[in-house]
Length: 259
Image (cartoon, rainbow, N blue to C red; front, side, top):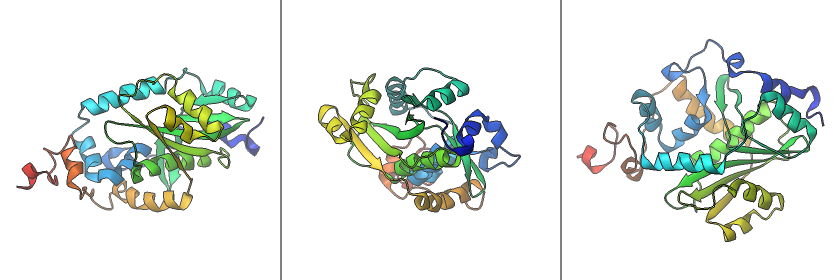
């Protein structure tokens, strides 16, 4: 299995992110825009701004979510050469690795939660979302984040024509963590992913890759990083009430700040 002609994806994996980054700097003097930040702009752009200005504010929800992620997505450490060798062997490979590329000339980078390779190609991409609330609804920022990873994989030379994209939403208190990723892949490979929802408290959403959607949404979001406009705050009070920056945010819609 030699992958794509010219093995562009091999060259991309061997590159360090420093080779991609130019002298260009974006808002907050960043050399690239993180996929997660770009997606979070569609929840509340002002929150993204404050996370850089004030720094990260730990919350119980974040700490629990991070811990669940680590348990569900535990993988063996590997090297670029070992990953390339495993992919080219054609055997089953589950990996998480740095993706990078450009949108309209702007450097973008991010790491998907899990990519499943088989026969030398990426077959399944899974993005895990934990919540203390309802798992039944999918949000635009979550859809964009998953599709951005597919876009970057395509840019790096991977053949994503057979890759299915899934967002798996789970409750933070789910007890079946360690085997969840393998179980989800098992059901997806059988095209019976909805059966998993009958066995565990999870919700599986399949997202179709739409490059036009990625480019359209990113065009608006990147203007913020290019200093073409100021951040746009959320217009929904419920977002402010659950935000850890609400007390410091001049745009907060909470009763305390709007009075």
